[in-house]
Image (cartoon, rainbow, N blue to C red; front, side, top):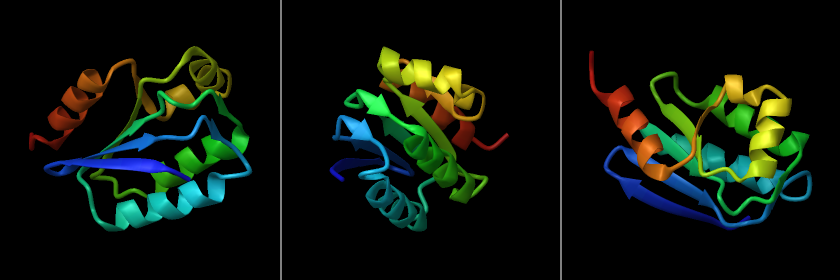
Length: 117
């Protein structure tokens, strides 16, 4: 699975470069996500703008990664196209994973989460 990683201080932006996240490639995504989490980013923004299709295994991988992330790590998804947004809403995954329509919105949210109260 092709992923683009960009670090912005303690925040990591992960862009999925594939157009599908499904049973055929989800195991690669899970493995790479676990490696990324091991590097300890304080925030993780997942850009899914290239995705045209996601199935239940893809959603499951996102949820599993969220579960594996340290509770101090802010994890969000941004730039989902309509078919992907519909899947998040249909499965109510949008109630668990924070979704943002743009990268600046996602970055602002994660940065605020990193500021100690």
